[in-house]
Image 1: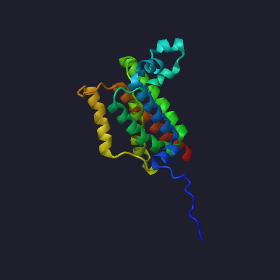
Image 2 (image 1 turned 135 degrees about the vertical axis):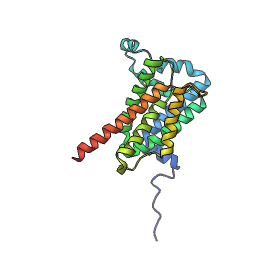
Image 3 (image 1 turned 30 degrees about the horizontal axis):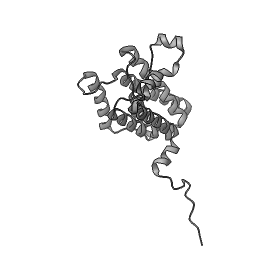
Image 4 (image 1 turned 90 degrees about the vertical axis):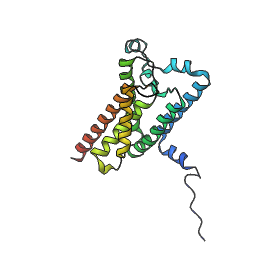
Length: 207
């Protein structure tokens, strides 16, 4: 008589299994969701004062360097956060499973700082959202799919066109929402450059 093998996941639902496999993606999603919930119930001002970005001159005096990444956790509407977290989950889980948690943390920090500083310098400190990082992940997956198709990740052409069109519409100022255009653009650029760097490093290691 044979016994069935124990369920190593403990009967956990698929989303929980995925969360365990991609802890950093899950943590950032949870933080953004909690910040939005607390903000919705009246805590937006103290949260924004604690984590929103400040001019570079001020940061060099206060040394509150976490503010360079802080705006990614702020969202201003349900549509805003749902759009960003959906793409963060889709792209982040794919990258964390393939390249590891440390690589995704590095991508998050580089793209978050790059997109936030660009938006700060061009438009001032009143902005927030994860979309700069999302555009960086989009740029990374897009370019890696083109440069290293053998790695097995990429995006459908129509999705690439949609996200690029969304970026262009933001600059055209025809949408019903205020867009952090510079954060989107410089996030995208940082993601593409990180993909190019990964491609070059992989080529060096192979040789």
